[in-house]
Image 1 (cartoon, rainbow, N blue to C red):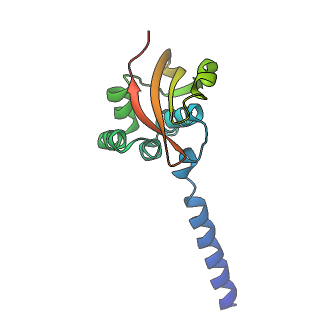
Image 2 (image 1 turned 135 degrees about the vertical axis):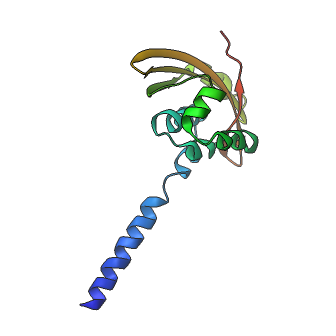
Image 3 (image 1 turned 90 degrees about the vertical axis):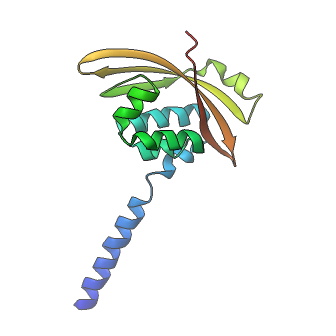
Length: 145
């Protein structure tokens, strides 16, 4: 009987351990820079997880994000955008151009969401670089509009 309790406890602990390890690496394993950028903002605005968002940033940008601590502060100060809920879509018109420059990508994202009941649309540009086969957000670029 004691052995059964021990095995049940070990199984429960192992299950919790394995499910707890999947959080931060999800974004870093995405092989497409457009989807990495979408997942970055999704982690920030919809999941409210600054650490997950920072996991795909360059060391300098990651340090800045983690300095602000809360996703609300990051959105307000770094991106001048606040959302309660947002849908993010990449601009896929530049995909063929990106294929010529495999280590770098500039991504344009379209945001459509709500903040305190008001609908807000915005556009952001990011520069991503490939480091050791993983796409990392390097810079937040000036808006083209």
